[in-house]
Image 1: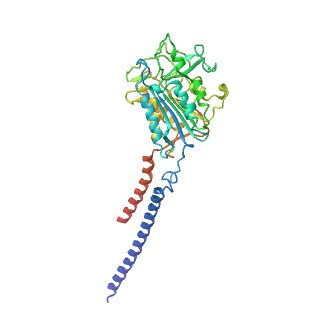
Image 2: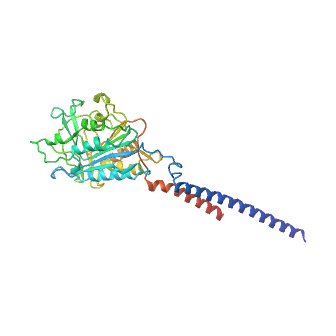
Image 3: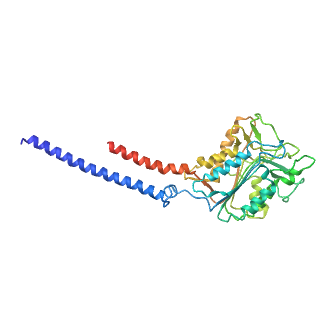
Length: 386
């Protein structure tokens, strides 16, 4: 046999052997890849490993989640009605229920809407319904959307002379009868800041989030656009006061607003640690709802944040602080479309670390491992074609 033919045979044989070795390596890689994917799917499917818990390690909320959620749009009569606090309340509930690991359960969330949201019912919801369920290690959330008012302590003083400017702020909850300037029932039926503090002080939880979307000062003023409605009442239902605004920083001590009363251990002689309070506006500003969002502006962005947009560090855990940091600039930016409208959300944070409220919703957490698996399959298919 000619020498060049023998060389050709040798080259063919070497190439064949090399191809077989390469094929064996590819099969080995394929087997490893498939085995890895199957193991991940098996562990996730059997509950041995949660797709996000073990692979991405998000932080659960503390204990079980319990919430009292209040929204008052329809007041007695029609003069004081708002449009969207009911939406705010329902949207907040749904955002909590969307949490990936189900710490927020339907039976652990009490919602009071419109005529249900009287002072007595809210008090009982916190001091009886909530207090008999929650414990020190659980997470508690109180949410209110509706009118807010303020009155001088010289007129009505349900919680002592503890205000730096001499005014109490109130949640103007549902009034069971019509109120007039001659019959100031709104005072007795509203919840003063110090009263809300006393309700919450009955709780054992060391993880309490308070979210309030309402006005706390000023008379009713019509906005430049009728689609924009402030959550406050016209005089004479409202005491007008002067005051200097606090700085619009992310963490700010409010001089004379709800947060100060809810958190100040100095003026209240009660331990007020473990609370994070998110407020829709400064203590001399209005809080607005809009037709465009079908919500209170602040609540809209807090809820949007709890669905995952607020997860600034991408750890799949949504904290009260992250929700505020997301909603704060968006609220301010949205309202710049209306001349002379200023709403500056406020945060009082008296919690060690950040308070976990929720996890990125289930559809997102499921998408992550599925995307990872599809990525592995795509990568292998490309190698195979080569």
